[in-house]
Length: 475
Image 1: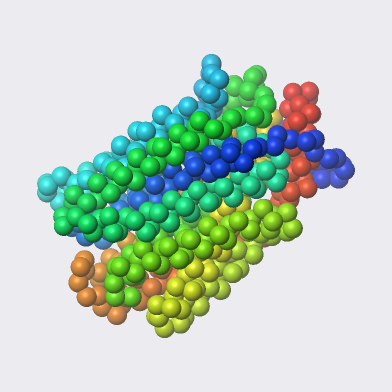
Image 2: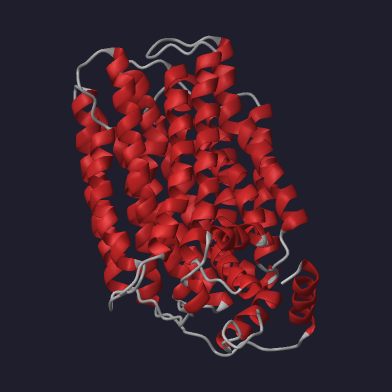
């Protein structure tokens, strides 16, 4: 179908005054259990984002430049694994009573937990072999992370189509993510410091966190269901590579999310990676790190409770924009003002709460984009759509690695030594200025590109509920 027909169809849906049928209402238990998935995810993913850089540089003696290469190249490799995971999961047949996504998520999470410990180990070998080992283990970890996170992210799209219910799912997911960040951010360093040899402390601490992660994924697996009835026959099962391209590149809301996420997630990851360096060198004590994380992330957990009310009042797009604007101001001030522990804590906390809100809304955006793609093209591919979104998260992680480790390398960072003024300024810039600039770019992208307001989505959901992917409406 040509572009003109697609435009007519879009306009018809926008102009027809239809109401959404009552959709599946999820129990509080199911919403909380879904949030436990990202809680478990955080106990493995967040460790790598926050502490693996320091493990490689300080504990293993790998240079900051080499570590920047390890993270950036590995994340780009991982980005191309997400479409593989998505297409593999979309191609599953003979789906049992556990559903399409939940079994893959559960099995993969167990393997991911084992690999999380492996990434925090390093054999006593030559430096070249250490670097090769770091590349290999983190790449393998990334592949398994794709097979864990893609089905988990896709699961929300088949739990409910109700706008408010999805915003609550997004809130519980973000609460799970922040809860994991809070616990790992507060407990990991003290746990690590209880061992004299960090080469022993890192894998033991990672093992404890990974075990909690698997238990959390089991709670998600056990207590969630795939309620939404979707069409998985005919054309949907026979999609070609051209169909996949159509799913991604004709989906404007998805393309907006992909571009936005490169900036939001790189801002968040740069913050998390640089916090331990900023506390140790700019503030004078690594002991400040768990205290600041507790305040910053704890306030974010409280802050995201506002997401459902904000979405109901302003809609998802305006809610995200509010977060971006506040984040730009707070992080910008934190860079401009002289370094002071009290002003730093206040502003970094405001900035992180502001970022947590659009990051939480993003999960509802993704589920909406999956449904939009089905309505717009006649092809429903949750896995490949979520994988395309997740591709941007991996690129963002690569950008964060380049910013974090790259700044350390370019400004002359020396492990476990007094740092120069140039290095301290570089650490502060990566910690505060980069998030301000990145969130500014995200705000511009969303304001100009996102074209799926909640009222339009409700009309699309009504079409899908009425089976219009089957009766020729999309042909």
